[in-house]
Amino acid sequence: MKIKQATFLQSSPNLKQCLKSDICEFALLGRSNVGKSTFINTLCNNKNLAKTSNTPGKTRLINLFEIKTAALPFIIADLPGYGYARVSKTEQAMWQKNLEEYLLKRNNLISCVQFIDVRHDIQKNDFQMNEWLKVNNVAHFIVLSKCDYVSKSDILKKITYVRNLFMTDVLPFSSKNRYYVDDVLNYFENLCNKT
Image (cartoon, rainbow, N blue to C red; front, side, top):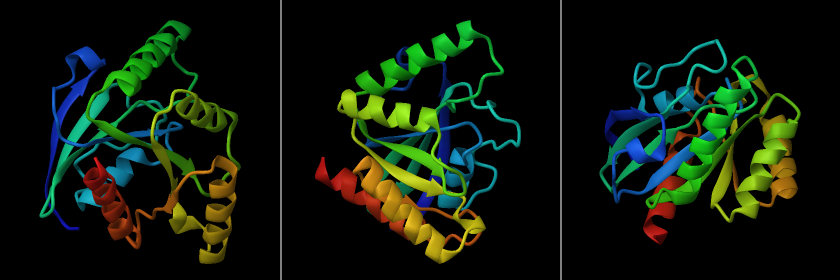
């Protein structure tokens, strides 16, 4: 599946202000600075599509991108990262409320994509997020980001470990060499075709 066009649609603070759509949508979840925006740019082969930063916590809104392929269109929603404490507790609580509402009530949401940095041990809030998705019966799979930095054998070991730990599909991803782009796009397409 090849991308023909990728467009930034909208930034919204909450579900109520998100554009209504019946196009398949995937929500990106992960710790701050795990590589969600870079994932979008790599997938779409456009380094300027989603804003990236070395400073954690920059994404504070629901950012929607429409991806058009020869087969079908779909939407990617880049959500604020979790695990970043340098904002007030009030703001953190508001983020959490808005994200939960979006994840539970967005009608065209097909699946969440939880990002985990392949280089590090899985963090407490990664476990908490995965448990929340399961408890609330929200469809999801995992992408191991930053696979550029580890050996292929270590990637395979981590895939097996994470798959057995969370009992869900796990895909590797590399922003530098684009080895896994087609696999991810095909996975998205298969999920859309099942709906």
